[in-house]
Length: 378
Image (cartoon, rainbow, N blue to C red):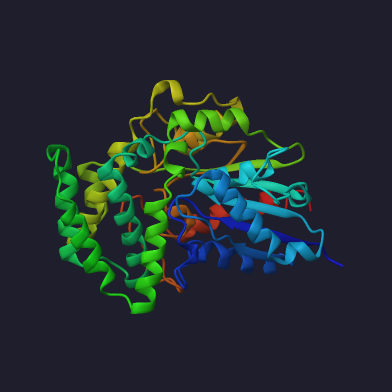
């Protein structure tokens, strides 16, 4: 009987995998299922439901619950963890030897079956953007960006009136020491009004989670992640690989490449704002890399990424862990299928419009490499 592989897709910061048809990993899951079938490999692919901004420990416990409720409980097939953004940290913690995730949670029966951990755009050395989100304005903006992401994936784009107001707010925020919370509240109300009553209640619960438990945010600062790395250890026998993303810095040329559509220009402003908060990585926080890791980055980008290089959310150098499986020119959401290619079926929808040029061909090449890595020992 053929070995059945169990693949768990662990979402990142916003974690909206639990919002009905709005699938965080929808394109990745479809690709994995089709590619594994083409290769004649039996597979179960599960999208994990995580607390959107709960602590890494809480989210690792969510991963345990997902595995416990899946088909992995019924056989002894190999387990593979693929985490995007913070999901990569959840995965590393889950397999860390002697980890304690809470009363009554025994991860060892599953952790010892893990064969690969693949991290995608993960802040292994933290991200300065987390420090910004610790402030009052940042906390409110975090909720709003969560809702924006969900809205765009559901309807394709934001209303221009909302995009204009957000763009205006972000371009002037440095000058507004006392911004008016009512502006953000009005944007919330306008967006929520387009959903059904049932979906609106679901979104309010989701956004409530983001607002009520933001334990994750301080853990993702360079200072917070330093403690995580000191206490989280690799498990012998597990192969660790990483997918690295680096986007274009905001510039006139990058703005032109985003397109002349007013909506694209306004949402590019959001990207520029996030990029500006992310590129300030302290030099002391940039990790050392192995010769093999540095060679992979130089081959992909033509030179070693500088300390300011990032994907708009996470510094590029912070994403390196284990074997570099792929290093691509893409923003933080491109690698999991959220880029602009509406003609594909199902369509790829973008909201972080960076002008990266990342498209389906690069997506398939990237994930084919990940599949190769997952099946390396079979």
